[in-house]
Length: 211
View 1 (spheres, one colour):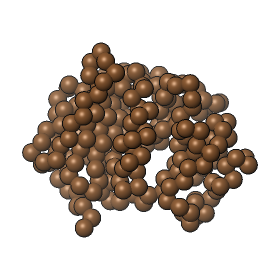
View 2 (cartoon, helix red, strand yellow):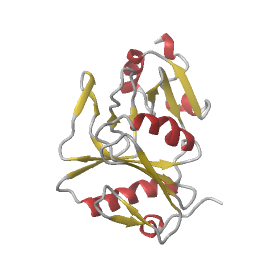
View 3 (spheres, helix red, strand yellow):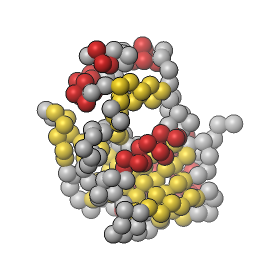
View 4 (cartoon, one colour):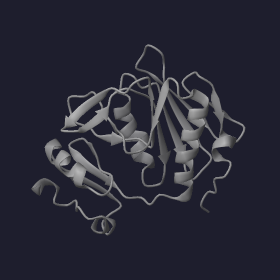
């Protein structure tokens, strides 16, 4: 465990450290730590990544609100919905390990086993990230760069928790190109997987932004 000595296994110790940590470590060392770690860690570019931003009320409200709106829109017959503890598989020679705030799967899940009973999901069609100041650039940049490699993925929604704003990235059918659209008005309707829309007003109706 020498390679990850800079990451403690006690939450109180981690909270006393920098908000964002990038610690070089081999993949096997990350897998060793993963089931024992009391806080979220991810893995990319041969580093363990730990971001300890505090969840605001707006962030948590938006997680629940978007999950509810997606279930209402897409239904439960053909889709499954998962929270932030579900790991995502990135098909790439290098190892990666990410969690999204909300993951939508069509039909049955496809599992890629990492070690023992630990696995990642290989076939999301929609991912949602709730943006906060501590994760904003990381989610829009580093994570989306890797999300694009998932063949089944059709759309990613980046929902701002401190402003009225959604960035939608949608894969253009039959290509590796993505269409970016931004929504910044309560009157805007946000398309989802070509199955319909939800309104910005419905999502943000009870959200109070920090001053």
